[in-house]
Image (tube, rainbow, N blue to C red; front, top):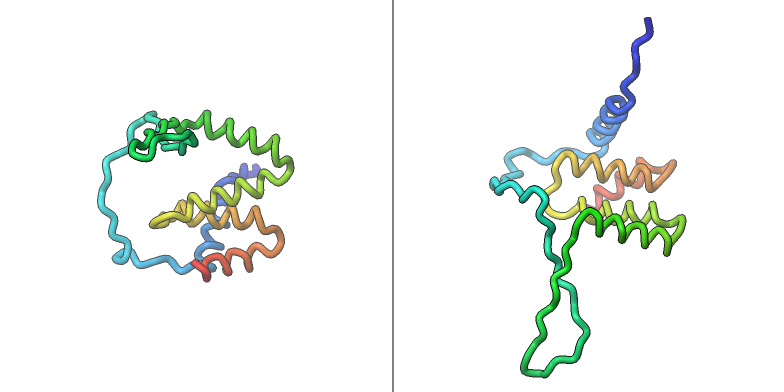
Length: 136
């Protein structure tokens, strides 16, 4: 009787093996994290947006607050896809790299970065991943 393959587990194992060979993990004692309260379940984050309206020199006009939600991000990606066409995946990879590479990296962040670099670089993915972590 043949055994059913779990391709996601195989991919996870492969990426972990590659990450272990290319990146030496930081010591646990170097990573001191302070516990933070859990984020609100579905509360959108307000983002300030610059207003381009003339205001008197002595009084500054307050900037309106724009809510960032999953839907607004998806709509922005759809607009980008219509505008840019076939180059959208590369731009999304760049956005993922920029957002995942901020602050202290978790194991999941490292795996995400390695996966995006793999998808973005093609055949020379090992060299690209190695160079990325050397520069970081």
